Structures are given as structure tokens and as C-alpha cells.
Image 1 (cartoon, rainbow, N blue to C red):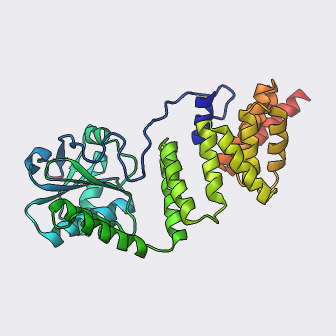
Image 2: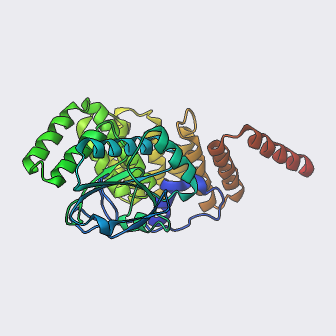
Image 3: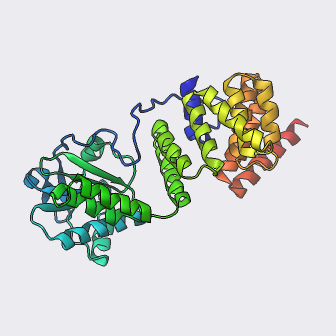
Length: 359
């Protein structure tokens, strides 16, 4: 049951037929956003070989004794382009023989794109293709772009996920630390100063919330929970952050915690539609089907998430043996997700045709 609920909360919109409830295995590692799934800081980075744009091999074994900055990119992604530009500019600015900068990607079919954007942005850092996605798998990448700093001993020193406004600043500080130009205290001081300059607490909270969303999409609910708790510390007045946490608690089967958050939100505002939706989901998980149905039917009025509400109503109807009602709700959920007027009209026409034929 718990595995099915986790899947519903993460990818429920894909499950639109009564014969659903596929099982997926959730990763158990609890990560921060700037972490890799398969490699911890201080561990030796596996050796890798990339095929360069010029066809020559880029082999990590040639970088022994040097600090390596490796940015793993995605094709046709603005944030990856910005990361590539910042990494290349860092190498040019520091201009050190003991520093190597490498760009990597698994998107080999987009070779022409990478050639063009490197020329347009005047990026000089070498770019190599991870042909078998071996490096991608060994690192356990979560999002793109991800940049790692490897120290002189070949160990993972730092990870920066996505391209944030302070990316270039943080990357330079971490690289200088690995090169020995900054000690631990100097690094902490730089990052502390920059942390203060990044923006208001509310804006930093929004970044943590966005990070949590990405982590959930990758199936890392427990890591997303950590990001949301950081967000809540920064912006305790944001009523959506606790409800984000409630969704994760429902996904993880921590029903008592979810109910506590939901009830608190409803006590503050009994007409909070999102809290009502989550309350209906909670009631479904606790097998209080009639109560769940009543709550979700009320939520359909001015509902911020009608597709998911219809989906849960469909599951309730299915469990109660009302297969026709379940199918109707599943169809409506699908229509809401696709939001295709033509498909909606086609399905309505088919339904009208069946009714006319039966009448």
C-alpha cells in the first residue's frame, strides 16, 4: 500500500486506468540538494574516459595531482550553457597548470549544438561525451547541470547542483580551497559573506523550495524534506511550505505527521483548498473512504488541483466497486492533465454517441 501511495504522489498523472498501482523502489539515501547519490565528499572519484568533440579521448588518469572542475551538462538548457561559460572563464581567470576544467555530457546526438554554443559563447574548456553514461551512473547525478570539484588526490571535494545566481562565486571559492589558496576558515568566511549577500530570507527560502521540487521529481522525497525544512526556517510565514512537507509525509507513509500539518493549516483557514485536498488524500490512505469522498467532492469547487482530485475520487470509486464512476473520474483526470480541447471534444462526442446508441 505504501509503495503505491508513494507512486501516486510522485507520478499519479500517468496512472489513469483502473489497472494501476505499479510499484517503484524508492532510493533510501537522504541527500542534500548539492549531493551525489552514489559518491560522498571525500571519496575517490571513479576514473572516466570521455570522447572529445574532436574525437580524441579525455582521460581522467592524465589529471593526476591536479585539481579538476567537471561540469556535467544537458543539451539545449540555458543553465547548462551558463555553467559552461562560468567554468571556462574560471579556468582562464586563474590560468594555472595545476587546474583542469572539463565539460561533460551524455547528449551525444546533440554534438552540433554543443559545437555551436561553444563557438558562440567563446568557451575554450574541452567538452567530452559520456557515451555509455557510465560516469553519469557512477556519480549518481540528480539534476543538470551538476558541477563537481575533484581535489589533487582524486577525491570529491565539492558539488554544485544547477546554476544559481552565486554559482561563479561559490565555484571559485571551492576551487581555490582545493588548490590550497584558501584554508577552511577562509572558505567559510567567503561563503558566509556571500550567503548574506544572496538575497532576502524569503528569496533564499524559495530557492530551497525549488530545490525540494526537483528532488521530489527525482524520487528523493526524504532529501526534499530537508530542503523544505531549511526553507521553513527562512520563511516561517509561508503557508505553502508546511503543505509541501505534508505531501512528502503522505508519500512516505508518515500519516500522523501529515495529519498534524494539515489540521494546523485547516485550523488557520478552514477553506484552504490545498489543505482540504491533502486531508482527502490522508483520509483515503487511512481507508476512511466515505469521508475522503465527501471532502474531495467539496474540494472540486474552486480546486487548485482538479486532476489529482478526480484521480483520488476515481480510486475511491474503484475501491467501492463503482467501476463506471471510477472510469469517469480517471477520464476527467486525464483530460485535466492534458488540457487538450480537441481530445476533450472527441471524448465527449464518443460518450454522446454511446448514450445515443444505448437510448
